[in-house]
Image (cartoon, rainbow, N blue to C red):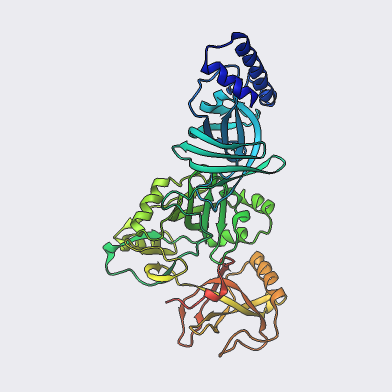
Length: 504
């Protein structure tokens, strides 16, 4: 307070030179003290950062800057001009747009005023190594500035409104938006249940549809929130630790906040989606194991829809508009991509996928909105091969070379009344690794009674709780509702058994 009064006297009347020079000296010493940590942590011969020896022009209101910092982990740095330096906080998830989205803020060392305009590359080996750019800047009005709480009204291009920073423990603070959000801005929702397609043939009104390749992988909703990625399967399972090579997608999108719909895919040596290869990645229990396996069998996130963007739901937009916005995002990288879609001429794409040995295509109405969790005729999957998700209700012991293992899976699908109906046995398509894995999954689920209603599997069947879903390829359905010539393709940990019904 005393320094503020001295500063006011020196600017409001003809100066007393002794008093003003004394104030200036004391002020410079105080600034130097507050920048000691900043200077001690840096080698200015190696780093382009300002040393803090210069002066910055005064402003009517104190200034602020938010810098996007691609360091070891992407984060944002909030800096507030205060008594000759910049009070600074690292904000890992960025400045909140909505009062319901509080963010962690970590108090860091004061920075010199020249940092208000600093952008550049801090070299590897230096403190804070990485690229730094100005994300927003402007002025702010102080309502309160204490050691444990700051209330300010920001006037920037991106950050506008009243915020509070409050201390919690150690160096940790929280930043909270006190004003209502900007019109139309909503908090990022919880994971959205994917929209589903019905099995069918090519639509008659070809020009009303767009066509995409049907990717043979695991469906996953990607929530990208300022440097952080969460992958969620159809049944709500958190897939994020299983695919560590996808985490840099969040950093690639920077401050953009999105929810994507897509598929996690592994490719074979010919560049075709391979559900079989993906099986060895789907069941790993630790992130360390996933990292090791990713060197041999990397995956790619194929994004084919955009559901939420920077505070705005896109579910009500037509598919055509969502696809245009997705293309503008530029989701393209070493482990993520946005594949092309084709408006009209579905027969040509279906033929091309058949020639390449792919599963098929998905037709999507250009004017269709996104309906979470619903299976609608607005999306139609047109397959080159007949495949079906099935619920495993038991198994029969093996014979001959497989006498010590399972012989076949006894599978079913749910009817309209929610009862599990027996759909036959699947005994081919296994290799030594998949046999071991499936047998290990089955054993803990044993039960004494059959989970099937009505027609039953053969005697000697070992029944289990109907918690596992498999994908099978088969020739056709018989009149009695049995899969003919079923081939095991893999387990589907992303699918809720209760949602498995007969397709087509």
